[in-house]
Length: 209
Image (cartoon, rainbow, N blue to C red; front, side, top):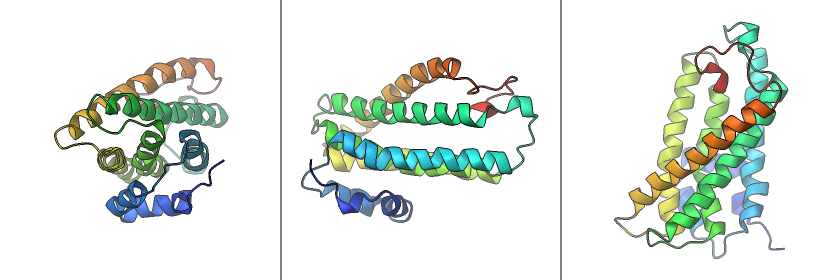
């Protein structure tokens, strides 16, 4: 089993992507050999998204949301749903990027695709925690971090997969569309299968944060 690069330490990498994103992408792109995709998922993506879900669910329990109790999903049920849905999102985006990269004349390899997608999604997982704080600051910061994550995902795909000029935006758009479609399909199925993942009374889309 190959050693996992020290520069991919989850905590330090999250900090670098928030403070110096392009430098973080460049450092990762310079890795001679990317770790196997499953190592990147289990040792980088999964720990960060798990902490994100635990922290956000805890905040929802201690900070009043202003919603009636029946409009809030169960902490455990929605927590399990969030972890599974976010994991599907990572895998869906990574494999979409992998299979689409060759179409856009880039370097198609699942290990580098998983690495690029994981780097790009780090700010969005921080945004999930930020969104648990009271409105409007929590939602605003969370939304800004999601946009920031999309921007970083573009640069991550561009830098780590080595796309040629003229093909970068096309791959980015196609990857996000396919990954979102996969996540939406499986997410709706999971929602109805996991007890407590949905509240008794749905008020708008607030239950799907």
